[in-house]
Image 1: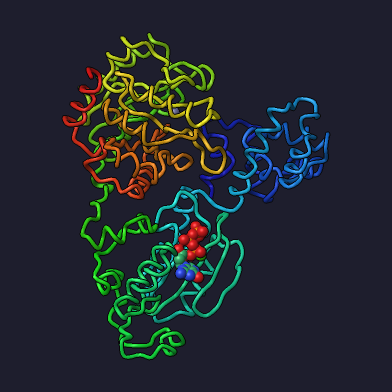
Image 2 (image 1 turned 180 degrees about the horizontal axis):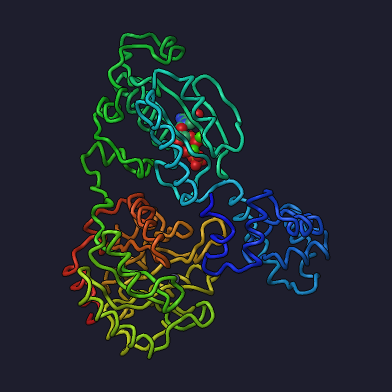
Length: 543
Ligand code: DGT
Ligand code: CA
Ligand code: CA
Ligand code: ZN
């Protein structure tokens, strides 16, 4: 612990005496006196209230003082009664925004971001796999389907020693409380999320993982297909029940002759289907596609060659140009495109680049392209204004290798206005990628409400790719929108929008989101090699 002492805390960049004292107090006592005093003065559900977009700690203080509001329900009641607009500093517009954003804040209380839940799942899996008696351990449920938000994490373990496995699970270091524990299952809370464990014998692992991966609707469709074939499908296997009477079929879950269940693929095979990737098990046509041997060959991590939307310290990123390129190379990319913010509305004060800075940066980027083994492209992230125009002059844009254009503000337009805005942006001759198209922040703001089809059609016509922003707060486009975009012949770019080296790891969230949208490597511009990518980008400029 010596190396982690007070000096180590104070040595962290940006941490001075005041902060380091509080960190040390917290580490030593588990609380901070000053914080507890402040909490006593303001007895409110701070996290819950500030989860409402547009409500910060200051507003919470003012609303408590003025109206005695302490939680979400009281906030909603006051907004509905029109009491908030009467408090000094709040207007009718703010009140309306609060009302609109409360449902998101509520949902945020119930469902965790994938980006928070997934690392917890990875860690608990590693913990479970550390025991010899564990034959297999895997995630199931929504987390295996990579939904953007997660109700609870489902873990499945195959073993012949259930008691030992349940014990190991509930005594994981990170468990805060045990919700329930039985012989073959347990639920705990750990690191802010519920984790459900189910334990099965190895011979039933395939059927159990199939069943507990869901979705419910996907499983219903498979079960009906089994019934059509005089079979029965459940968490114990697929059974031939042609010789079994109706009553026994109902009452005995394992009735009949078992024909599948040890592996998940055997479950699908038993009802004449190829294995279906978890990300598309949402009953949106995947079973019919599988039956017709028309499943897509989904994009995979290994297909990704580069990242074409990342930031450096020239705008609001944490790494300088060279360090960022080195990080991209370490990550394994063949190329990276530097797309710092151009100055403009919606960009954090002063961090956007002027035209002159963009030109200087592009020259430095070209030098790095020579210096590094990986490709380095000179780009920019421009703002898409409310009317669909963008924030940098055309002649400058045309000197760059790649232009990402993204909406950052004025995200409460009507659906037609918002759709026109993005159609106009993707039709701009210099724009190559439409970044985080809706601007949504999961669990906190809805973003633009759009019709994706006309935007995707225009994008296809003008050679503009639509982004899947891999940041777990965004995942924008969503899987459903990716699918609609591809159906309209648009191309996709999966980008991390990284502002630090660690954020390159977000790529996996983008890849799985694109998989939820049935994307194949041919649809994804950064799954192409540099030459193919550059001819796409060049065609774009001159079209
Ligand atoms: P979540 O946790 O809300 O993000 O979503 P899931 O899909 O993980 O749902 P969860 O945790 O309630 O259950 C995991 C999977 O187990 C679910 O996708 C399908 C399956 N499952 C659980 N309970 C039932 C059930 O009562 N009937 C059926 N058909 N399937 C179930
Ligand atoms: Ca779940
Ligand atoms: Ca569950
Ligand atoms: Zn952006």
